[in-house]
Length: 257
Length: 249
Image 1 (cartoon, rainbow over the protein chains, first blue to last red):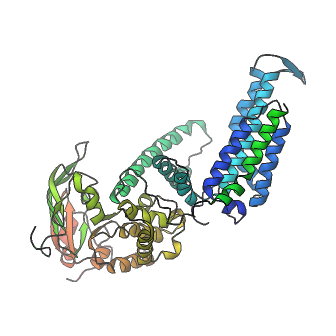
Image 2 (image 1 turned 30 degrees about the vertical axis):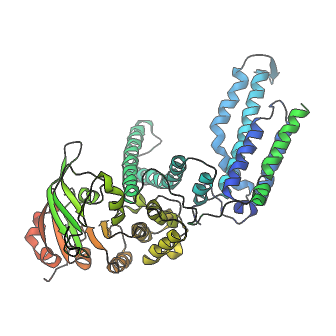
């Protein structure tokens, strides 16, 4: 594990990993905007976007079996999308004896494909960018220091919180708790409450320790400490290629629609 | 202010702190620490030790009484300067280390105090070298051992170049080797030190003087060996040497 590894980081030394984080963030944003702007009644542009994402995975050395399980995070949204063909009104088609709404089907398709592409692209950024690169990258993009520090703190403490949840669960199970039994849900609920209090207290202690080191609300620019140098124009041009390609696909889709 | 040699590094007079829930944590505490002295602050749980520590750099504000650092009374206006002179190392390194890499965390303090560029990088390198963590500079604090995290937390404070170093339970959760390594690091520093601890042998190793705090006041103050040899005093304040230990004064 290297500097600033986080749960979605996949260590590597590819062109994608080496690309400056601030450009990768802009690239992701533009890519997602291009995908979202595409008319959902069309199919081929989305194949184009998928091709772009898969090519970047190839370049970054991210195997499908690593990235696909992590994409399950969007499952709850997919469930929601699956309801739309039944719930929407308008024209209906019959599929296997079930009446489905045409607009609902398109809406569901739009959510599923755009969501999936968005998650895939975001995972690509996460897999190739360590947390250590993030503060400098965000502040270079003009993100306010408060937002940057909240993000950085979140990434730092999410691991600690997860470890604490694990220890509390282990302690419950060691005392005969079976989380699958409904009446013991109470123990879990109380555990969550205790966790909230502990996190709140930790937050206060972290704040005290920051105050003790002269924190006055602004996060100092630590760009010289371990942060990579600013992106140069040629890096911008090269790293933005996937985003530019996606914009191209989107524009093409609108033109020949 | 008088001769700088005779001005105490820390002078606490009648310090009283009442928490919003009415709990009186400090009840008129007096303490003077000379420059360069290493003082152990002993006492049972809930004696007010951590509250005392948080007053030394103005994180908590006294309900009444005063704290003077090198002759300057701590108040709202001079907090920035006071915090540069008084470094607090907290008990749980995870409370102190919050940046993605050790080096960035060590840089946080000095950058707040206005250091930039080469000077900042140099200060960070020196602080990391002082705690033997140069190799770990670019690592995430989560992936360090408990001993390394403790030393990293110390480095974050050393980088601010404090005149007074306050450590809360520095030996907690350390294995014997990490404990010794930390002691060696601390003994190599020439800052004035207040070490809040329950680890009496550690206090004896690091400090010449000990004060016992209980019920929010100082109940004993003397040479560390004399305090630790006084079994009745220790027993009265829920302190005792670990089994098999004895101090010869």
